[in-house]
Image (cartoon, rainbow, N blue to C red):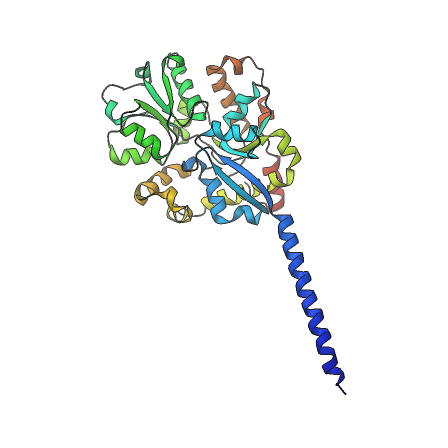
Length: 351
C-alpha cells in the first residue's frame, strides 16, 4: 500500500506545474498588454538635439514606461512630420515650430513634452568661403544647406535672411541632412554655408579652427539675442486626434522622456556618451564629447513648454510667413503641459 505522503507527491507536482504555467501565462499576457507599440519618427537621430529620444531607448526608459517604441530615423523634421501625417508613424521627435506652422494650414498638432529649451541651430560658413562671407547679408544669391527643405533649419534660415533685409527667395536652399552628409557638403564646397547642429558644428570646428559662425542658438544668451526670448526646440508631438485617442501611450512617452532628461542632468557627459550607440558617437570620441558638452545646457530640466517660448515661435514665423501672420493662430492649442503635470503629481520628479 502506498503511504499517503507518497500519494500526495504527484498531486503536488501537478499543482506546481499548473501554477507555474498559469504564472508564466499571466506574466506573458501582462507584458504583452503593458508593451504598447508606438512608432516615433525622428528628424535626424545623429543630431545631439534629439539625443534624449535615442538615449531613452538606450536606458530602457520606454520599456519601463510600458512601451515598445520603434524609432525611425529620417533625414529632417519635415520628413518626420510627413511620416506622422501619412500614418506610417505615431509621434514626431522634432522641433515644436512645425506645430505652429501647420496650425496655419488647419492641421492640429500638439507638443506634449519638450526636451530642448533652446533650438541649438547654428548658421555656419563653409570653410572655403570664410574670407568672402562675413555676415548674413553676404548670403544673397548663395547656396545654403539645410537638413531638408521645410524643416526647422530651413525656417531658421528664412527668418535670419528676412531679419537682415534679404529676400529668402534670393538664396538657394539645398537639403544636405544633419550629420556626416552636411559636414561633407561643407568641406567639399557643394554649398556656401549651412544651418547645422551639433555634433556636426563641433566636428567642423575641430578641422577648421577659423570656422565662421554667423548665428548660434546653443545657449540661452545666444537664443535671446537671436529671437528676443527663449525659443523651444525639440519636443515629442503628434496630431491632437492621436493624443486624445492614446492618452496612456502619450503619458508613458512623457514619463520616459522626463526620466531621461533627469538622468542626463544627474550624469557626466562621459557617462552619457557611454550609453549612446557607437555609430552615433563615431570614431572621434573627443569631438563628440566636446559637442555633447556644448549641447547639454540646451536640454530642458522640466519637460514643460514655456508659453512665452511658444509665443516667440509664433512671432518668428509671423515675420517670415504671411500665411502664419494672417492665420490668427491660438498658439496655446499647439502644446499641452497636462501630461508633464500628471507625471509631476505621480512621481514628484518634475520641477
